Image 1 (tube, rainbow, N blue to C red):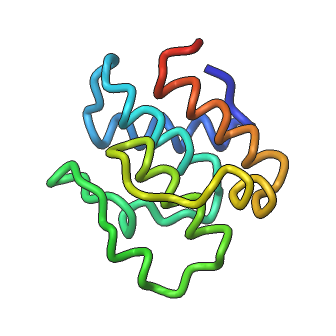
Image 2 (cartoon, rainbow, N blue to C red):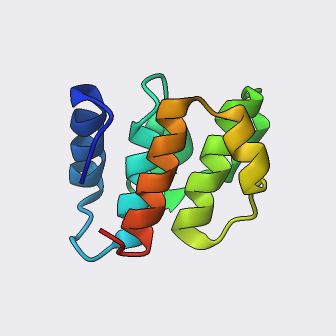
Length: 112
């Protein structure tokens, strides 16, 4: 698994450890990989580690367009949540986050 930087890897490992994500859970691994790619992300507003579930109400809390797109796509990889088109997503996100999206897709569909 390739990471954008050391901080991305540290956040990802923290998330899967806190969640006790097992190795074969590609949905959660892709979800956490993508969310860990954005350094300002407050994971506890997005995911409930005790219930092991997403918190869709985060989408109603004044996110930027790019943040909302990224979170919706992470939800989509996790459970099929409706998200924006690939064109809208890629025209909004930066190069590093575009690469993280592609890597998360590869994780989710076991393409690595």
